Image (cartoon, rainbow, N blue to C red; front, side, top):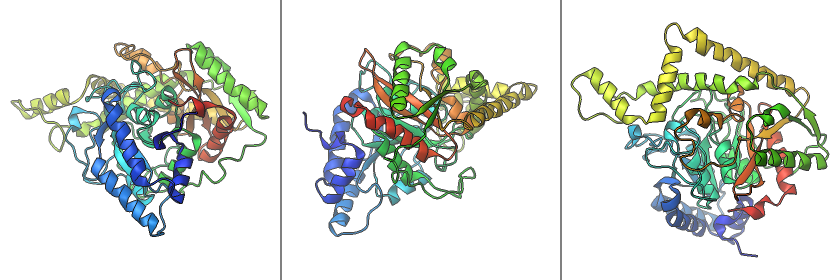
Length: 487
């Protein structure tokens, strides 16, 4: 058996080796930097590399550990950050020309939490511009690629973070999930990706796309990695009015304890709608594994789930239209060089600074919010959103989690859907309900298709029950051999 390099080892193993001195943080960080320099030219996962500061942090942590000082939860562990999360004195571009040279004047709440946990921030990762996309092909700085096959996309919008972890450039990464932007790239890249309950992780310092849908969450190669990263970043933040008044989580405490009497809900009719056979096979394999562990599989119905895509693509663009109105060429960001009036300066700056997909969504949202259309579109979408949440509330009276696909297919080839926005939007078919309802959901790897590309399934849980969700995900992981299939 080939010996794993430090970058290829699970997070739990890395933390144990760091703690007992079998591995230094400096060596681990240098290994990650080596992988980034070797692979980023072909994968384009990182936009900004923080080499000098990362090494300094690693050396300082090694010295503190040698002195026997108390260290944080993630002490000495490198982590990649999606480039729509602000970090003091560091570029935060959102992969947009509009913010190409923007340097953040403050740290996001999650950055502060990572610093308190003694994690080492190694760099900022690529994304679809302003997190609007499902393939990372919308980045102003060029698309990211899937490490399993560079002819395929890594998913989006957090494709750079997923590509980085899958290629062993970093043990952990943060992404943001507005309609599946953590879970879909996690499935495409063979990772665990968690979207927490809305409000469980502060959005302070996350550049807003759709404020009622956005949520920061972890990428990892296994369930333990996502659990411990959630432990580090969760908790109340008074600077975010939507932050829930609960303390930080302790998800790793009971992670390996199976759920007895487990009841899993399955929506059969959803898997009959434009879902590839290998995805259906992966989901059914997961169902069989849980059934073998004594779980009861219960058919459920979510009557309004079919309206989720239409609902999302009204609400999200409306909120994007509002949030992105601040980028006007005056306060900060890109400003056109040639204009003859204030109005033309606004128009040219926004026209030149935003990419095609962002402009498409701004126009959709502005139209839906315009006079005479607000009630017909936006207000009606909010009502349907409530019905979708009520469907889940009713289902959770009888089941612990809902199991289904993450995506209709495995990763698709670059350029395959880039000229067909509707098909691209439908790749979010199974993920957006968790954002509309605010519920936690996780993508779990479950094998490879005949092209050697990863497959995943999704578990959606009750609000605030990340612990249950992760324990159920761990039950599947513990029975499988996925860890032997790592890239």
